[in-house]
Length: 405
Image (cartoon, rainbow, N blue to C red; front, side, top):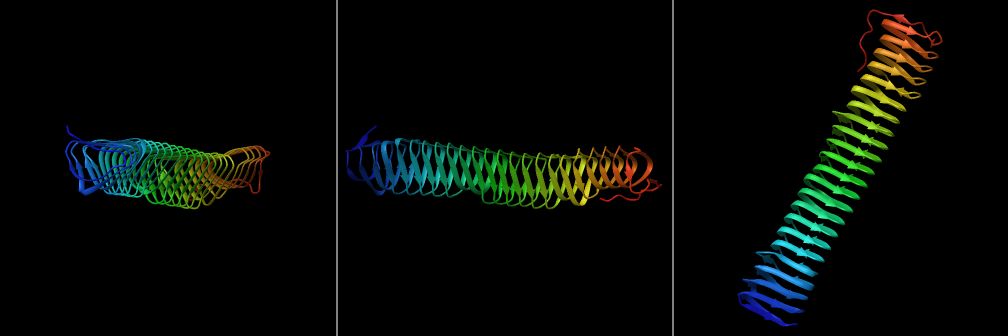
């Protein structure tokens, strides 16, 4: 195949070139319309192309190459120990740049690999994008996989998998499979995802809907959040409502709306919900506050429980020395040793040693030693330890009437 050569420091004007094109360092190529090379272009150093460049293959090394137009390559682009600047659009098969790739126009490639930094001022479409350092894209990114060793800062996304070692920030979009980041994840608008995992922080600026969420530090969601499971190692702040299967919180959780779960709500610290909680199981080691709580199977509190309208469950357990504000309504209600509660309604109510209860309305009631109860109303049986103190004598009735909630 024929070859056209440009010597070091050459200045040429080209149009159609048959065969390969080889150029030494510090050359300038001006386009006579469009430079069309039927073969492969090899640039041995810094080069500038003033216009659109089309070729079958593109290879450069040891310098910066600037294309002041479009760069359209039928095959691969390889930039060894150098950078590539394209002021127009970039189209190719595989793109492999050692240092930095900057494209002002749209990018379309089968695969993009950049050792240092990738900056795209418009849209990017590729099956796979891999960046050793940072990736910045101002337009929509469409890809199967995006991976960066440092940070990713993109606009709209339509991606299967998105991973970064440091930080990910995006405006909005869809990540169908997984988002994984070692440090911080930030989305500014609506987001749909499969799985979201962050080692440090998650900030969701709009409504978000996805599968499993795991964060080692903190989560902040400014809108509504829908998920399969949510696991937070530190602090969670959901300003809207939360809906999913389960929540596990290591520290503090605040929710400005309501929480609706098909599974469990579990936490070792404090949970404060402005609206209602609807879940299958609720287990809180510290403090729990909500407008109303409905737990279908069981609720267990290790510290304090506070509601405006009450708590209802098939089984309610106030652990030793815990206390509850607001009515408790359940099947089995177990007020353990030295715990405190107000009005309690249940099928079977048990009050432990030294516990304090305002009023009990139940089918059966068992009052332990040293317990203090304001009133006991029962329909079947009441067992009261002699050392227990009742403000009024227990009384049996044929109809307990409707329970709250």
